[in-house]
Image 1 (cartoon, rainbow over the protein chains, first blue to last red):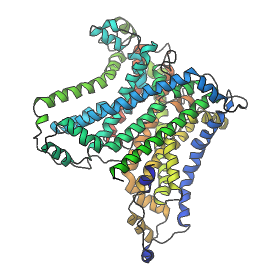
Image 2: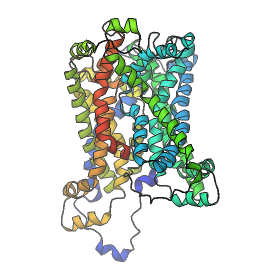
Image 3: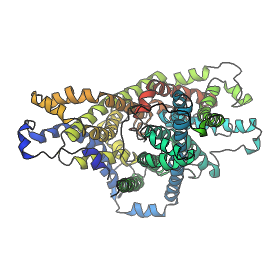
Image 4: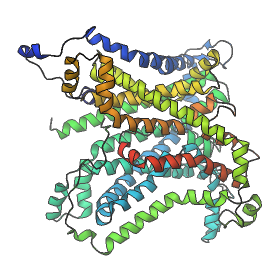
Length: 324
Length: 295
């Protein structure tokens, strides 16, 4: 994991024994005293995250409707999951969410950030670039459910999108975009791209600030064109940020709930169902707590695996950079 | 992970001579036009919403979603405002997000003080645990939390949501601040220790003032993230007196009351506070966003 390095920071200089006299005086309790500061956070953490997580894992081994006592049934819920078509559909839809929330925003975000920073920020006023960046970023700070409700109306049969098609003479394409199983998923994906695009733009623009301008100048002197410089310098220099964006967006895509709730409630015919909505629905509408817990547990495991793989890949690429 | 707080403009670029033949003349205007077009497309949904929030239902059914309103109709806005008791929702959201922001920062700071400055044993594992907690899907916690809240009488209270999000947000805050504090200048701590300052004094007189800009960014992010949260408030807050702005709007979705203009009016009212935060905190957001891993 990259974590230890970042967190430990510069290790305490290895002080030779003779300087021990200048060391800061030991206070009462020594290092142990710092545990007190961790106590409130640790208690809260156990109550709100640790115990409930264990609870969910336990419930996933039971049959329970939420009232009375859970009945222990071993791995039955998991066996059932593997045969459940809805479960597989929901994870296939997660792949679509990864395309819409990770792949497209990262690729488009790279180009947009480079263009905003390099062309617009420098050939026009930086304020212009900042204003344009704000327009792309705005959906990121809004309650995603409210944005989802607006989009749900826009994509309705009598909504603004069909109105727009009429207005430009494409009325023949009018459609119930969210109501048709064929178009529902692509429509939700389009909304997610709209929601997500601003995040990579902002992160990459910040990253570009730390790239040494001399690299670009040298490349220009060598006659490298814009695209060539983008590939050889920009992409290479902001790789750490690309990892972070890809990781955080992938995890967001695996967890996506609010937009699906607002746009389609997973429908029609599960065409847009995703694991988190599937779990919510199983918990609170079907009152199958054990089964819902099994879905949540599988989702949790997948997220942990994805995170560990990403962090491992990032470490490896950093090691390669250092030539180890 | 390269989660860092980058101060805006920390790397001042020196002005470069305009000698790049690729961006001189016409092509840069084409690029500007394309990007501006993209930005406008991003804003189109808001334009649609504004256009239809001030339209009467009759007007909507005759003129359609793109027509200019034939009168400046505010009844949709007023209906939504009073039907959902919007001021109360605004207060609920503010109370919850505000409390979480303050408490979350305090808990993060205390945790990070022990981990980053105190370097307690096993800190790497502890920080790793916090980082992992930040990635958990809320579905993995929701049912036991819901069940426990019912048992201890916290179900349908704002306090339950405040406690839960204080912990969830501080998981991220702890991870971030612990890595910031691990590079805190030792000399400052040692100087304070030589003056006989206790740990508590060092925390509030030395560490806190130095960390204030980072904490401010964290405070704003916690506030906005909590403001926008949906699943846990949806499950925990079931009646009008406790619900937050997004939950109130979502639970009216599909209701007879919510014709197209009222849906737009309700969405408009619900988005205004978030847009205001955006405008007020734009600079801070841009500065801190590299720390703000989207959830």
